[in-house]
Length: 273
Image 1 (cartoon, rainbow, N blue to C red):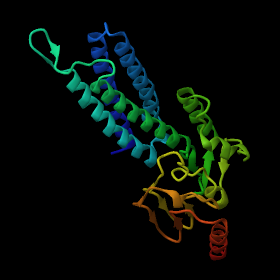
Image 2 (spheres, rainbow, N blue to C red):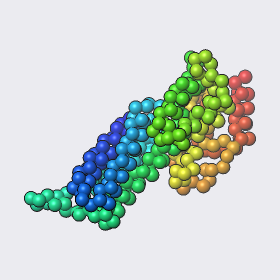
Image 3 (cartoon, helix red, strand yellow):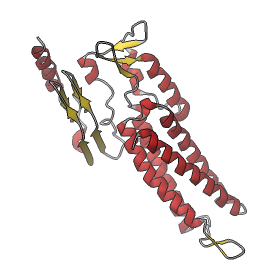
């Protein structure tokens, strides 16, 4: 499924969750503590929904890594809906709930746990969005470039949703580079290798590294890992799949040293003469 489809699906589950929590809150409005807790859950889901709508509306943010995180979030939101439906079951003419939801009860703890899981997944999603390669494009002569205006626009949207602490890392990347009159910044091989790592820099993403669905063509060099830095040896989960290199291109799907990177550039330069 595409990023758009997954994002739309998650939004649907969250909206259903908000509606079900609203019904529970109305039913238990006399329990002040529980009612407030349900209100907090609803507000958290509304905040998460806003950020996922941003992904749905912006193609540039629908990266493989973001989509992968949304798939995980979709699984947890399905669990939320199943739990809320169970808690909403009623019986008898008086429509008494089968499971009485009481502040501090096992059922209330289960609900809080699932909401926490969704919030953690949302935090992971925010980090994925920060390192998305927004604004990458190709010039008329098929060289890679960055659209400065696109980077600044997406960065502004991210900060509006997540706050000033969630800046797009591409902003720092383009800051020291001079754009052309049309706002386009041309990139050479060295620039491409120094792009913010889209997946490998997830130090707080539970030790997860995912590299998938990358394509390298012609004589390009693509490094899908950190250059000159440690970090991959400590991972608890590593997934590298569905990456393709064609023609005389070079693709590296792991961390490499700066010496190896320089050697790759020298080798490519020699073969192009």
